[in-house]
Image 1 (tube, rainbow, N blue to C red):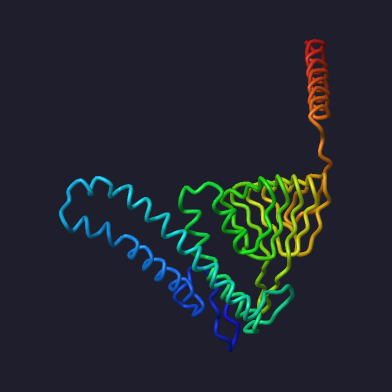
Image 2: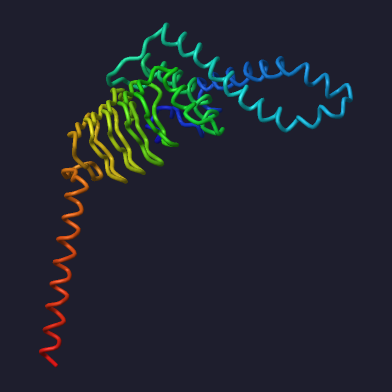
Length: 272
């Protein structure tokens, strides 16, 4: 983040975790989750210290279980922290100045949700990220697949049977110079979000639309349903063909190539 003349740069990225005072929430969650972990494992630690040798055989399994327990504890703590913060100052859509109250509380919400989302995705917990997002208020329909892409934890709505691909980013916020933009993102049912795509705040993707790979939407852009949209930014749209139409097109292209190739061969024979 660039530093304006006469202004102190405000770090909001994970690389600046020690420079942003709001990141204290990460340490609070980690500290109390660790306390819960130690308290619930005191009996097991006592058995290990007592010298019961066969207890050591289950240590690897215990470590694995502790990772899950830590993740659930972090999620539990963050849920209550986000409820308290939202009760004090509810999140809202809009365009806000740097150091405004909305900016300040957005940073709180960002750091509160960071650790649980990172933990749940670092462990092999199928669909648990969906549960955590719903816990934070993200509206996710049935059979939604978000793989390992980044999805903001507020003002996001994704319809039933929608699938995102690898390395997608769905943002309901955008920081531009000294402005924070927060706008709701709505993705309809039966949509496909291609890999390496970026969905900007305020984007509306209608039902059965496809966002092509490596595409980027504009803030507030509306993508029509039943079409394929591509571009950086998205600027081209194509109708989605049925399987039968695609097969006919491939056959037609194949015949055209065959006729052209046959014609070129005949010309070469005549020259000879």
